[in-house]
Image 1 (cartoon, rainbow, N blue to C red):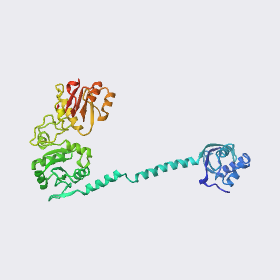
Image 2: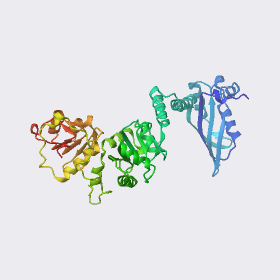
Image 3: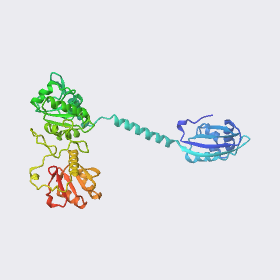
Image 4: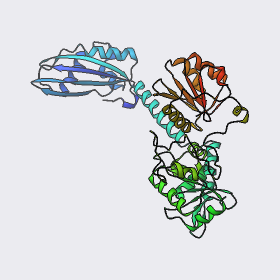
Length: 421
């Protein structure tokens, strides 16, 4: 007897069978052929359909429990939809198998092509993902990769201790002192070619010589080890400026933005001695565990400003009245301004000075229009008339920023800049 190839089947007829007795597989198949014989005419005679390959091998899967037999019948078909449905319906006329009563019900007719289509779609997704992962990078990615490789190749050994250093360490008048080789590599990766590694807490003679002839900035990790290195440097040589990575972070893992922010926030070494608890135990820290910078001593060597310099035209404007500002508010605003340097962000505070959230500066005006309980706004930018008008409509009391283009007398709001506080 001919059999239809499973590959050529278009439909699968699936039926459930329940028999009140114990029967074997041949009994079920015999009943299917015998009780449908002559029922559908010569064109749909099951024996002829199977002989011609239009009906495949009939599969019967059954099990017997408690004297009853239950199972499934599977018939592959290459007939069209209507003919396959007629064959499936004809199975349900079977009422006896052998000497036992039986009930047969077609559960479903599955379109094999739909299953294949689902497989094709899922496989195509996998192939496309694989192609995208292994596809050629664009020109910018190639340029970045080549530039990064060249920068890493540029690292050199400097001095008799052969310290890792950037290629511009000789000609540059400003030098960045970092802790190790990985820090030099990270700075080199982001375009800083004038870094040199100290390589431990014992200060090499080469570093001491560098500090004598060049303007030096110490850039260490944001942990206790960084504090110890600064303390050791201050005790054995002269350095000009000091900065640290954010708390808990290392210089080697900083992004380009974080590196720029840290270097812009550097302070003079003399100022660090006066304000750092690591060097001067008498100094108290604020709630954020940072030195309080509200009263800065005058350094013997002028340091670059902690925040962005205020343009001369803005400096001539009247300063804000800060009599209403409490010491808690003053310290909090200073800390927040320091945190925001270079981020182009804004902090929103409620009347209890609790943080409501942080938003990008371009979204500040839209946020103020939608949030109704903002008491103060501290942001990395310049106070202009547009933001003042928006803040007045939102019943904001304080605007704190780096600079201001608006005179305090032009608005009922309290306008504060870093120079005011």
